[in-house]
Length: 110
Length: 113
Image 1 (cartoon, rainbow over the protein chains, first blue to last red):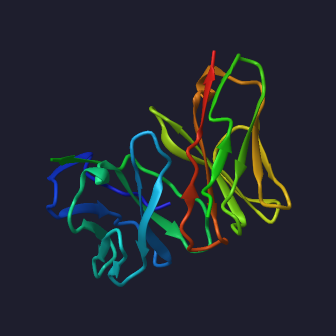
Image 2 (image 1 turned 135 degrees about the vertical axis):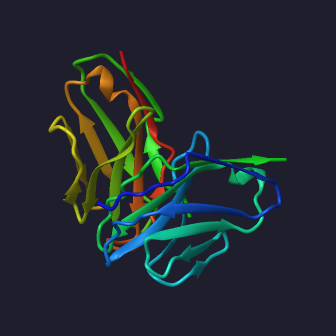
């Protein structure tokens, strides 16, 4: 399993963009990069995933470095509801096993 | 579409007892995974079931077991409960094996006294 490094915590103001970094320097060539988040008192929630190209969906954007050793989750306009722990998870294609690290706790200030 | 449901939501058991937790995946989802979440160890993968077969297993003792039924519903069982088994047990379902997003239930909070 690839190791990940994420900041323990980050803070943002409401309606501002947030860039959440993740280092995964030991990622293998077939690992996808998944991002999940866990809001307080809830189960984790899928955010986005990608392999090599940058990806966008209604929740966020995922920017993947050319060497795939790092990625950045971008929330374009943070809301109070985005306050959560964000997990970056490299995962092998075909495997349902998600290895969660400690994640980044995002605080959004009104 | 209804989300992943887990029953019961809260449970208190005594050391040495056994417990069975239930998970109903989203309709049409065939893969079910289980995770344990504790303050000390975070979220840890327990096992995954697909087509009634365990496909992947985490690093947990044999006291933790599970099964999946033909309708994709899944149960996990913990025998001879220990205090350290107190945790939030989360179930996640996905449409198929592979690169599909997993949808998590609200979890079952197990307290062992």
